[in-house]
Image 1 (cartoon, rainbow, N blue to C red):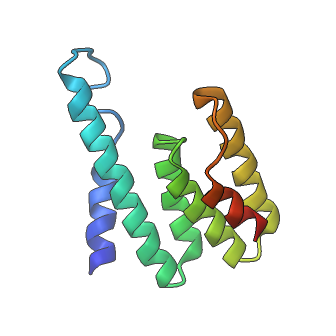
Image 2 (cartoon, one colour):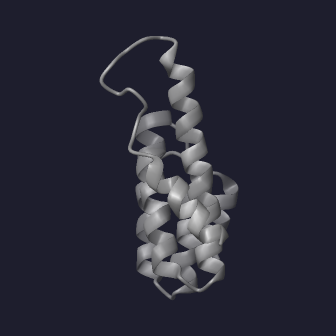
Length: 120
């Protein structure tokens, strides 16, 4: 039941709210909707992964990561799912992509928690 509700909620998000218009007051609304979407994706991915629907979980995580590419929590979840499936190369590729994005956009390195996950 919860999976269905989260799938329905995630399906409602079609990108940035009023992305064809710029008004400063929209920034907070856009951020709020984006954050709700990312949070719903994280919860849905957890439920799917728990139900052994790993490929669907990865699909949901990929959509969320596309929306928020610097969210390490999402990438960590995707790396953990890839690792659980024995896809070491895919997990490492996700980490390398995160490293690049964090460096280019924020000039920072991944968190110690993310690095530790990859080392394990």
